[in-house]
Length: 333
Image (tube, rainbow, N blue to C red; front, top):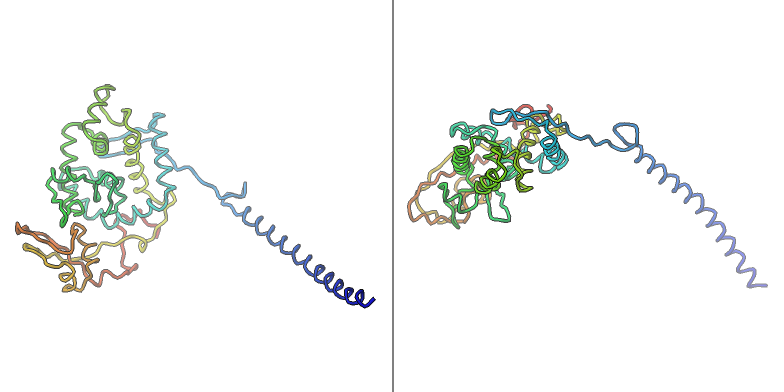
């Protein structure tokens, strides 16, 4: 009897705890269900409850390097469509391309003009490297224009353990202009020039002969080269009106040009870090301004003259209010 009297209070307590938990759990389930319904109902079109994803508009034609290229043929339309979709929904690279171009295009555009190369070929550079000065391919191509070592040297670039001018924006751009102009003498068509830049002149020549076509845009090419052509056209299309394709940037989002002065070095440099400190910089900051420097020293036995950019130390601090868009159409404010 005493045992029963001891158990009874425990049973009552257990029943009270269970009765208290059940409503709470039910209430929690209601909240969870409501939250799920809220998430499902969040949508931009108000019809199916999901955020809508639009296919980017493919233009019927595009002007490239002064030539009108029709995109109404089924194969051209669908190849362009693929690259537009890839570009517009690869947000990381696409946004970075515009940000970097704000710093690079003011340097590259005047060189293209001076060398007699169409301004649109700057988009080839964007496709090659996404505007990343330090870009390096698995095959060993380097810099904005992705020169292989042998080709870079052929076109006058110094490449060794201490200096690699594939990373020199001005010199690499001038070398690329020479290469592109040499190709244009062969093909007379800038899109075909672009294809040869990707796959090599020999491959383009072989396919032109076999397929009895003159223009690379109408050739059966390696899949990468076939996409490469239309990727360049897609980049130009998006760059000319980013807002239309869903990219909304402010002036402060863009990477600004860094004002700098130039000094000339015509002898050995025992320590680039020490030279940087003399100008109130770190070695990292000096390297970013002169990415062609590949070591902490320069032997320079030949007494070659090197132009070294010394950035304004104050301008290396982020001041978004001072950033201006190189192209007003890149920003929404």
